[in-house]
Image (cartoon, rainbow, N blue to C red; front, side):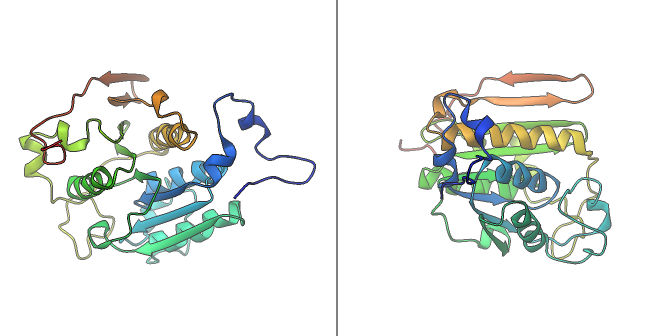
Length: 252
């Protein structure tokens, strides 16, 4: 899909970036896993950037504590499925887009025919599941995480280091914990602190990586793990190598 308006191109400013392929972006099929705070900001940025074919997967429900961080949720949405509300409201920003909502845990999702995957998840188990499937199918995966005023992103490209390459024993011990808003049908632990500015920054960094990938410029992607500290206003990047003992890379 090529998004233009007669006499006035809504993506004129983006097209002025030499490497940005706006028409290519509009044709990419994107999977967003997670429809909470990070998912809201990622959907906002994806739609404004011209992504038109998006599927959003989430198994959780809206509660009022989401409203301070979720731009597409409203008063009165309490108890509604996050994925469906997010898809519907995001579509209002760009009616030409095709946004599909799937109310499901990612572990029960079986469609992996996508050009890129963006993770907006709140637990390690779902991250590892998404990561392993993206690696298996050769799909670029951009993972994001937030904890209070800190966050991180990692771009997993085919053949490169993945999330599991950086895992250790402490990650394994908490792999099944899930920071759910409601706690329904899941192992429940108290939610972490969160605020919108850090969420917005991490989501923007994720979508910027998605723009590079969709424009055929994966060579510009951040290939390590980038940590953001909102208190200090700093970013730090840690080099990550492919772990030959990682289950996702063994035999390669």
